[in-house]
Image 1: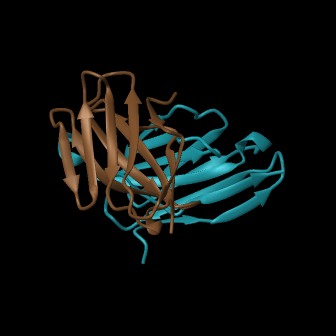
Image 2: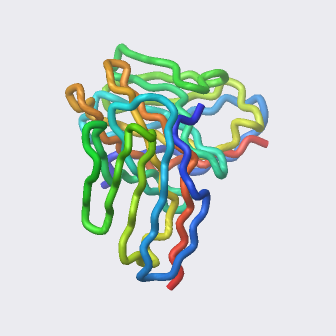
Length: 115
Length: 112
């Protein structure tokens, strides 16, 4: 089974709808991240969480919110979806590396289309 | 904002040839990582090089880091069709508020 799972894998929705993307991990990592990827671009950080009580905004948090329900679960919400939020969304985890740079492990992605 | 910028944006080679991709970054880093992404899939970590290292090897991969020029290169030797993917560099500045900043990637196509 995959260590980092995302649901749904694909979603088509309409402008103004509320959407929740979910991420679960079995790696036991404290740190979790949400990124979006647009065609031809790298990943942009939306939100990140270093533990259940810690939530931080990334580069592009406007229009998004998150919830860290447990160590293993980190969900991303679009309260009122708009077409320019059409993108590929990735969840990632890392173990914090004890002060050293740590590797991030990515989920398979959710392809979101907002009409 | 993107910290890393990969060069070239796209690279097409024949199987068996070597592929070299470059990454330049703007501010001081703690470490630099390279990731691979197959089309539409999640990124997979390839290799990490620390700021006090100059070269690192892993199988057919060789990474160099020149902190004075704020640049890194990824060399894939004896490429295979299965190496076709996008390759991203990612940097972090260390510290307690650790996070990665990704470049835009190089799309590598290896033709059989």
